[in-house]
Amino acid sequence: MKTNKKGFPFLHTGLIAGTLLGLLAGCGKADESASGGDAASAAAEIDKTARLTYVNWAEGVAYTHLAKVVLEEKMGYDVEITVADVGPAYLAVADGGHDAFMECWRDMHQDYLKQGGDRLVSLGNVYEGTILGLAVPTYVEIDKISEIKGNEDLFDGVITGIDPGAGMMKAIQNEIIPEYDLDIELVPSSGPAMTAALKQATDAGKSIVVPAWKPHWMFARFDLKILEQDADKQVWQSGDIEIIGRADLEEDKPELAAFLRNMYLTDPELADLMLKVEESEQDVEEVARQWMEDNEAVVADWIPVS
Image (cartoon, rainbow, N blue to C red; front, side, top):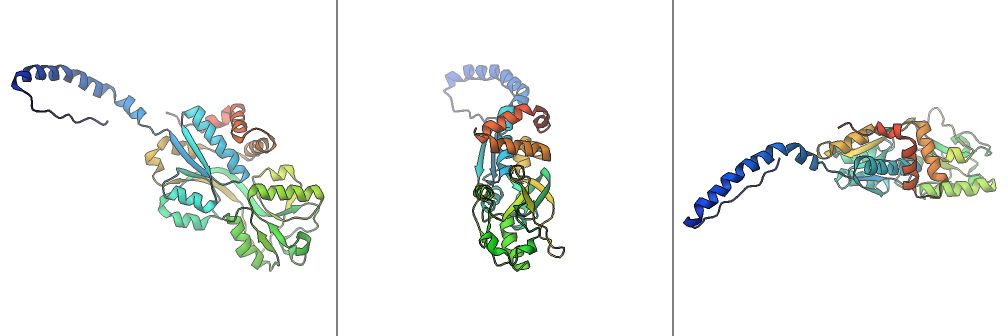
């Protein structure tokens, strides 16, 4: 407990006796306050703020807003969430400006994790069983990545991408295109822009190839297939999504760190949340709040026991 240091000024001799009596009379009260107020003081010192950063990908948007409303309404936190590209998001956490990055795909984000080094710490998986790849509408008559070669004109010579800092984009540019010897251009955009292009193409019955991953609502909305990888060109594997915190988060904000470690969504839970967000005309936060109220048992497991 923090205590104040009191200075005693030089006093006129005529005031000393009265001053000493007053000090002695107050000592008992001060000691009593100090001994009885430790627990209350410690509780008051818990930092009830959270600064979370995420990427504008459908799954992260959905569950980051859910984390916000749970922290605010169930745990009394003041929460700030910030959308960013992948690289700046990791840097913001490593530098201590944000408490956690909400969407680490470890296999794809190795460069960023290495750059952050011991300034970053894993807070565990928020989702398990990811799938990544290139996807096309099911009416497109190819089933493998290798079959894009020679059919690049079918897709107007482009892969409609997402944000340029994404690990998938780097893998497509640096591994998929050269490994499969594709004469095709990877065009960066964003997650929402990619799905808008996907909708436009499927509505018109046109061919399109895009980066795709599960979890994502696109598989519930569109009839898609992920193109098979060749056995000797396996770029993507199934994995998990982690939350990454700054290294000193456990020390500074143990309750927040415990909450983020506890946060976990199954595939049906996250699919339900994402689809509700996508189909609703309400703000994401309002949809997340309603989902929280409808799934009290799920979010209750995330809240640390005092």
